[in-house]
Image 1 (cartoon, rainbow, N blue to C red):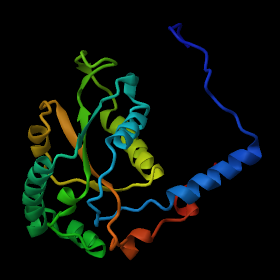
Image 2: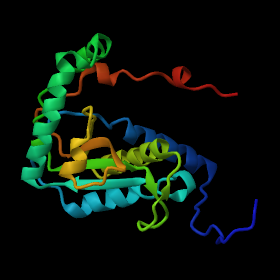
Image 3: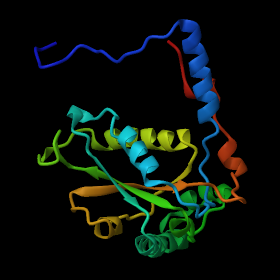
Image 4: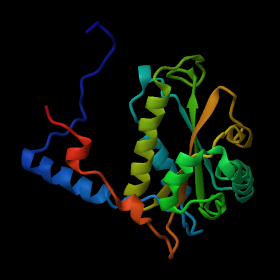
Length: 224
C-alpha cells in the first residue's frame, strides 16, 4: 500500500465467536421484521430521530470517499402535497401503459396503483439524490465515482437505521423523478435516486403475501 496519511484503527470491537454467532442471528431476526408498507399513520416523528438515521447513512462506504449523496428530509405539508401531485402524474402515465405489460404484470401481486396518499400522510419523505460532482467537502466539484453503488449502500444503511429505531419505510421510485430537483431545490447535477417514505404504520397496515416470499440461503448464495 502506498504511503498516505492515516491513523490506527481504534474503535473496532472484537467479540468471542459464540457472541458473534448470537449477534448475527439476532440481527437476522430483527431485520427480517422489516417490511415495505403502503399504509402510514400521520403520527409525528421527532426530527432528531431522522437526523440520527441520516447521519448513520452518511457513514456508508463510497467511491474515493466522496460521499456522493444528499438527503432532503421533508415534513412540510405543502411540500409533501406538491410531491404527491407530481408523483401521481407520472404514476398515472406509468400505469396507463408506459411501464410496459411485463412490469405491470409483475406488480399485480403487490396491489399497487397510481394513487399515493402516503406521500401526504407519512410524517417524513426523504428524497435521496445521487451527486455526479463533489468530493470530500461540499465545496469541491470533482467527478464522483461509483455513484449509484455508493448511494445504494447509503440508502440501505438509512432503511436499516429507520427500522432499527422502530419506523417503517417505503421505497418509492416514480419515473422520471426530475420534479424532485425543483421541489427540493437541488441542482441539475443531482439525480433523484429514491423517494423514501418513513413513519409509523397505520393501524390497518398490510403486507402483501407476495412480499413475504424470500429466497432461501441456497438460492441467494454459494460458498466456495
